Amino acid sequence: GAVVSQHPSWVICKSGTSVKIECRSLDFQATTMFWYRQFPKQSLMLMATSNEGSKATYEQGVEKDKFLINHASLTLSTLTVTSAHPEDSSFYICSSPSGRVTDTQYFGPGTRLTVL
Amino acid sequence: DAKTTQPTSMDCAEGRAANLPCNHSTISGNEYVYWYRQIHSQGPQYIIHGLKNNETNEMASLIITEDRKSSTLILPHATLRDTAVYYCIVRVGGGNQGGKLIFGQGTELSVKP
Image (cartoon, rainbow over all chains, first blue to last red; front, side):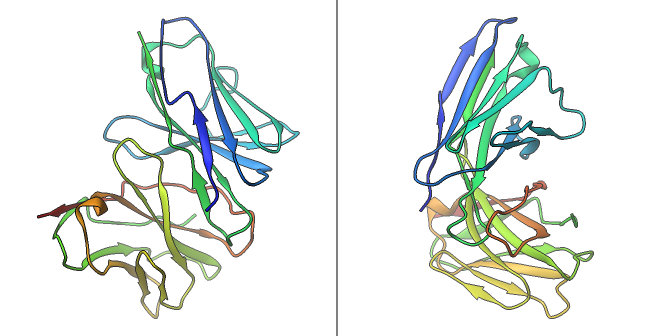
């Protein structure tokens, strides 16, 4: 099946620094990618929709200047957490519809961010 | 998108069928029922989806009531590796692009030896 990868799988950073997370579609072109955040013991929360070649669409309550999304190619979307703080520590997951199997989405393995 | 209601947790004995219910009483005519699962600290995995007919694949079966207000995901022979949180999601579908998924709290299924 379609594969979505994320890099890094985990990252630890100091408060105030910025962290970039990559999401790649390995065997299909992804014109759309979704970014989710998941806190411990909670469900996935959709943050934004990333569209290749255009601006991302953010869900209500998600700060677009803090969570920068870039989707410059059909296989790569990046999420940058700017000026990270401990409350940004979370599990970040991306997904993309593959377009080959009708109406399913494929999720990356997730990135565990810990901000000290 | 319509909301869904699932039990918070369920247990199932290994080798037995796991039946996970989902209520979606406000589902619209063009909304599909999707099931995903998430094993601890991994990304969610697609299981199955359907509109109104029952569906079966190599992973599970999906039974949708005639009025479409509820559905049941059936894992016919649960194994320990099926321990996960199972999410029932309803949304407009039918195309190749696939829209965004809004996750509820899901059901935490524990398969026990």
